[in-house]
Image 1 (cartoon, rainbow, N blue to C red):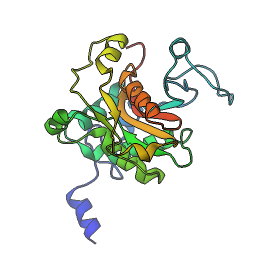
Image 2: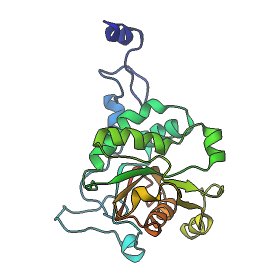
Image 3: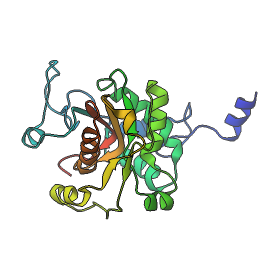
Image 4: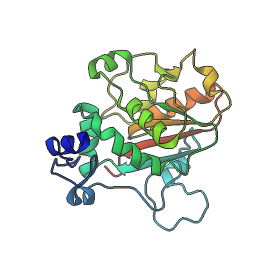
Length: 239
């Protein structure tokens, strides 16, 4: 009765355009078509779509073959454009945490090839000054929801930013790496949680991968097992 009353007062609306839909946390048909989900064959290192069919062998794009990543495998759920970009900006800057639940469901499906026994999930960290300004870490919210969907344990403060880095927008991959040098480390009181076990690092968007590389390297240096990466969206390489 209570649930029915709530639905009458607050009918479910599309995450993209706000029109009424059949169920909570969904997309209308039009927004679903405009949301670029990634499926099919992808690069195992960066998650970008690739041509051809999967053949049970590792697939890598030319860029990742030339520049190996410091993680074993990575997946992305969406391409960062069109409706996906709008949804993520709403989560990141528009104070719309209600998008976390459905996007975590999407990410859980993308994460299936990455899941390992005894895996620990951790978010890409925000510096405390940025966290105070934004009031929440969107990657941490995604991690909590993803942990509920997968049943895997998570550690929200496994990684910490030891310095406040400037915005990486507009910087080259090399410049991003230089800015992040030594800026991310494993929390001294959480190191025991990752010793010898696989770690899944989660973020909302990947551009060059510099931040995720810094996180993966920090985990490896602290004695983790294999490191994997999952992001909600991947910026297309031709953008």
